[in-house]
Amino acid sequence: MTEIINETPDKIKKTANAIKKLRPAYSKILDFYEKIFTAQEKSAAKTEIKPAQLSDDILSIKTKEKFPLVSLSEFPVDVNSSRKLFKKICKIINKSENHMSSAAEVIFAANENKKIDFNELYTALLHDNDVSFGNIAAELKTDKDVLAFITYNSMRPSLSMFAESLSKYIDKDNPWEKGYCPVCGNAPVISTFESDGKRFLTCSFCWHKWPATRLFCPFCENRDSGTLHYLFSEDEQEYRIDVCDRCNKYIRNVDTRILSRFVYLPLEQIATFHLDIMAKEKGFESGVPLEFQV
Ligand SMILES: [Zn+2]
Ligand SMILES: [Zn+2]
Image (tube, rainbow, N blue to C red):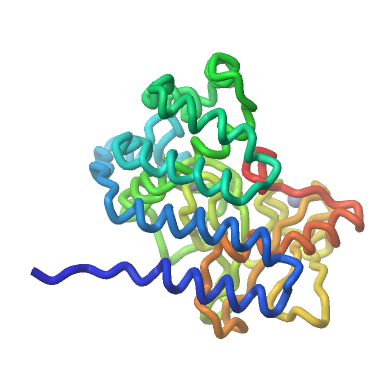
């Protein structure tokens, strides 16, 4: 039997090392996220999700109305693999000794004592039920934001896998003319330029990547060249910040054609905080929903 070797963890390590060399200030945070992303990739290899099936009727309505294919509550989670990843992420946070460590310790202990009902936890997050999620955090006597961070990151392999199974229903050749993710309806987290100068946006929730028009603000769907521009630094030709004067929002953009390293977008997102600072200093706001800003 041939064993399938997942090369991504190794590539993540190499990419993180390359970025750390260029920008040593990111070393600590990259060390942390490299561990989280590696754990997610390893968990993905053991995650099983039934591929999505949409009927022709549903698909034709969604396509015609430009609705996202599914709502968040329709995302399935492989609870078996996600709860193992949940435990692993708690351990990574504890070892990293960062601002989440003490809360993660409480959560880890609660899990060891079988006090966490994972079905309830995942359902609360996917149904965006803030009250119910807050109650779970209160019962566990822990910080709600840290619990949300661990919960979301532990189900991310399931989310990406389900989104991937839906991508067959999406037109990959033409730009999607809406600002939200065609799979789940969330805002994009990052923009990329890829071969032939084509632009893509990547979802902040399910990490689906879709083709987008180059001159386009995903937050207000502005297409006017007079009010769309970008900020950049001479030292970093691979990055720029697309800004919109109409809604005052920005999105970070990575020109993957310039990068010789393996591009792993979650890492690029982490390693571009300085662009956020630059944009905010100029008076722009992030278009990424607060809960997905790391
Ligand atoms: Zn999405
Ligand atoms: Zn805008």
